[in-house]
Image (cartoon, rainbow, N blue to C red; front, top):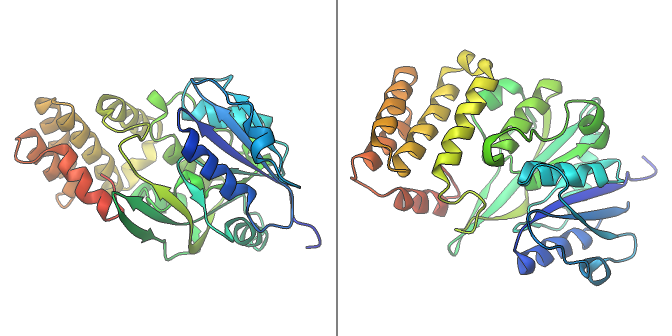
Length: 307
């Protein structure tokens, strides 16, 4: 390969000016031979037009746009994708940072696999003073793999995709998901239907988990979105353990929101599908006020895991 393809990094943002600047600087500072454009998409917040002049560099233009589609992460990512000029499109959340070498390694990996449309990598999770590396020990990920396991390592800030696949292939991020929650998981499922995902076994992205997350404590939205996902993907019925994982998440969300009866109903459904699914028992413990939901999450996050 004599020339590296151009890349557009799409960065949705909302009220995180300092973290946003760190994210964009990490993108602009990538050691990548091709052009890297950054499109910052302001979602439900006033755009800072000074970013373009402040952070742009040679062969590293920064553009500022607003979300002109559905409010939320899905619409913001799609607004950025439609404004992008790169042959490849990457996502990066405004509170995350690409680590050195990320972009070059991913482009090389994508071009090494004929027919590949999508490449991810490992992450370094930072939460409450703790840092944990999460890396998948596999080079390829199929649809059945993703139905069984969400694979937290496949974080949106690691996604690098061929622009043609987004615009003319498996499509943009789905904007119908309630509150945009789990839009990244639905996107992965759809992408894997088109072609197996390429994965690098190196943590190339720093992911920050904190209480200012878009979805921190939004339990009703989480429950609604996960039920939407189960209805949209009947293939979950072919993977009982994967289906139980999602119903267990719904049970926990219902418990955390104070809906004890709903939590118990979803927990029972989960146990019928997979008696070993721990989320069902965590949901019952929260519903029975044995433990607080936030205490469970803090413990999991310190280990680089979520519910």
